[in-house]
Image 1 (cartoon, rainbow, N blue to C red):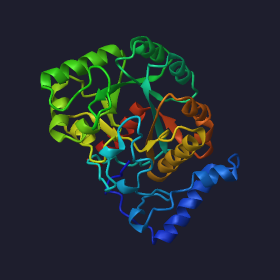
Image 2: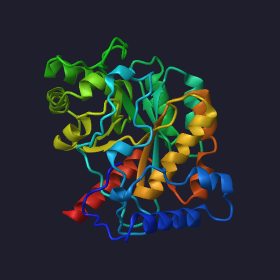
Image 3: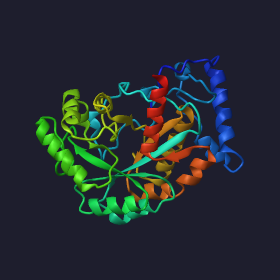
Length: 328
């Protein structure tokens, strides 16, 4: 997540800042964290002096070109839709001014596997469940998750680049505003209690600013609704369009299970924790795969070990809104 330019750099040099970051990480790791875990949560090595800015020690401003896991996973969007060019997302998220670093985790594609969804609901961590509205069990699982105190999103199907099928009732580039509004209304009716939404696939639609403006203006969503750009295209316009429409909008920082094996998911989780420590906030997205669920079973302990607070997306949005008010 990119931080606002109001954070003026005052670290003497990249080397000095690096030492300060290491010290901050070591402090957060504490006596209960192993040396191996401490090394895994260390800052990415490719950060340079232009990325070092702080108003409190240990915070790094991460440019979009160095987002961890920025390449969307093949199961969500075909790689031919992507480029390696750095992309500066239009939405800027203010950093925390106090309190512990925060990490929010969204699990997409919930609903097709009911047993996996129930494992997520039973976790001792406040993950947000993003439910596919066309799943047969969507409504029942949304109610079950809500009753258990879990936050629920709509995982809104959108048109990708290429031939992958985003599923029934997907939003597409040349639909009329009324058709978009109808499909959005249907999706939210299928996921009762949803406090926000993020895109399922959508590399074509989210990269089209005209289509994004039409979608957000057509929808009759309350201004309290949250939107998270899954960032399935490097030139996504979704977050900035949502913000222009008056919604609280955020962007994904890390894909947890781009490579679906436990070791890789574990590394990506450490990257998400590192970004939270560096920037004050981070958002990670995963899927209800066995490998991801196995790693998430230990999420609370690992976050606590490095001093990161696990929060819901709505809590992260509230922090962002508060920081924006303070900056205005």
